[in-house]
Image (cartoon, rainbow, N blue to C red):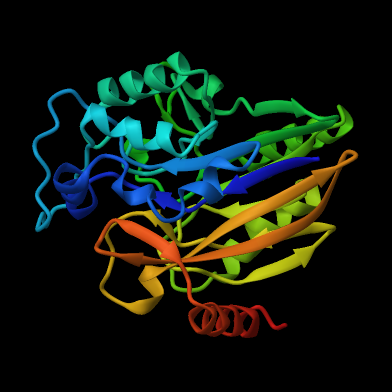
Amino acid sequence: MTVVVMTGVTALTRATAWRMERKGLAYPAARIGDWLREADWTHISNEVSFMQTCPYPDPTQEGLKFCARPEYIALLETIGADIVELTGNHGKDFGPEPFLETLEAYQSRGWLTFGGGANLARAYEPARIEHNGNKIAFLGCNWAGPKYAWAGPDEPGSAPCDYELLFQEVRDLRDAGYLPIFTFQWAELSKPSSEQQEAFRAAAEAGAVIVSGSQAHQPQGLEFHAGALIHYGLGNLFFDQMQSLPLRQEFIDRHIFYDGRHISTELLTAMLEDYAQPRPMTPPERTALLERIFAASGW
């Protein structure tokens, strides 16, 4: 058996970073860290690059140009990160150098990356794992842009969504015995658009067994399509958005693989507190979220 945990947006900046400075670098993980550490493979979608000259965080920052101080990577170590998604649209807010330095920091720790890379070819390379007889591969792309966030032939960045190339890679991986997990950095919507649904379903039809939306700052619905589980958006993991209840609600998807098959998914649910720290939902909170999401999913 292989357990893969998939998460939503991580952005160690602004008020989340300010809380880490005041309360400790592991503070955000204090109440849900075990959910992440107990998985065989823990996925993080970290949208903000680490930068040596990143200033002390300002919790009231108004602009959307983000960086993270290098020491904050300790939080990702604390939760047992194994696989880091690079489809985020803030990775090059301060240019290519922090992106490359961040990529090197992941690689030096033995973490796998996908959905971005040191150049366009690397950005399209899947991350492959083999564990307990299960072969799993991760691919992803950034649909939303902005264009400066994308990788180029000689430029690091996130992978733009070249569906012909990526979906052929999905088919090739299935032919090689892998179970592909495909992720998207889509536009930040409160519910999936028709274009988003079309793209996610196309990934499933190409052979992905799980299609996951890494972009959503609030949870979105689910769907079974072409034998795949689609989750259009998981919400945030570690990001400071406390403006409304949906922005505080989070999914952490615990996927179970056995004997070369994806056999089940457990929907873990969390609530963001103090701009930085998710906690397990209470039973009434969980019921309310699941009822809303299942209704939106047509279930």
